[in-house]
Length: 113
Length: 112
Image (tube, rainbow over all chains, first blue to last red; front, side, top):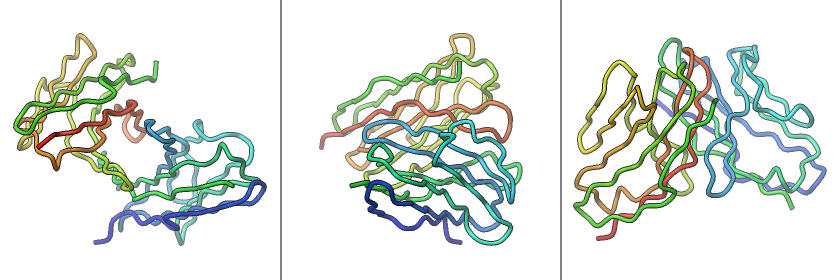
């Protein structure tokens, strides 16, 4: 039973490019959360999705950032026109149904040059 | 009101000693308090969690103490080992299914 899978592990983009981060939740999990972590800081909530629905996007910047979790396939966090301040580790986490335990992936380290 | 404050920022303990990390929260609607352990280059891993209806929970060398009236909870690591060296995050969650709010993390170093 594979855990939460994120890819790519490392992503390098130049300013102005687009970044796409993928997350496949654990098998049977339909709830996905995205968090951002800056060096030596805690995890900051960005968005919470259930299959095909955004439940809470209060932590996600209104501009340039979007997220989706389609009926089929992984959840995608998309950052358009990246800036240096977007450089961070982005973690995806999933849980199943009424289970409160949240399982994290290994993250995507985004570096913006 | 959504904040979770964690201390200390860093902690150095000798092998065999007790590591204690503290967290405080403000939102009385929080009803679930997990602790996560994170190694460099890895995602956080759930260590132990507690609900406010109990004052203590123990799993192996790890214990959570919970003080509802003070709105504080702490992680105790007994017989700390060098392999415990990692960053530890406390967290809190409100209504079921909502997001976790994390503390800023404590970098624990256990010296051999």
